Image 1 (tube, one colour):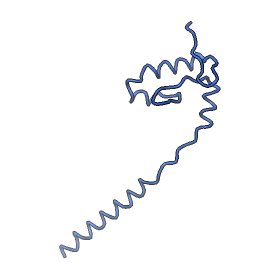
Image 2 (cartoon, one colour):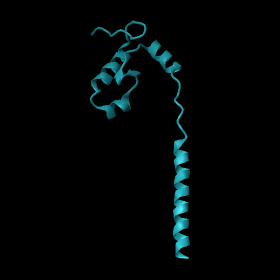
Image 3 (cartoon, one colour):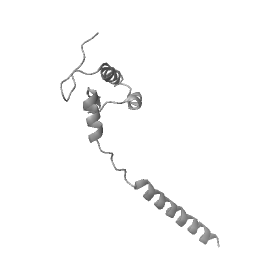
Image 4 (cartoon, rainbow, N blue to C red):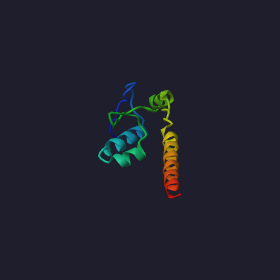
Length: 95
């Protein structure tokens, strides 16, 4: 068996499953669409970081979800208003 990589946080050895994930993710860096579908490990500057199971669990627990802006609702409202104004102008010029 090959030597296990050290964890980037605690410097302990990775479990074989975590090392396999790291090797697969680093092997597919040239295919970004494929990498986005299989990405499990956290990344820094687009490169996966080898973390052991405990550090990965702590990282996931500390990561907060990013709030999505409410821009699509606003864009939809503006779009509906502009279509209404356009239709109003078209219908009033024909009368």
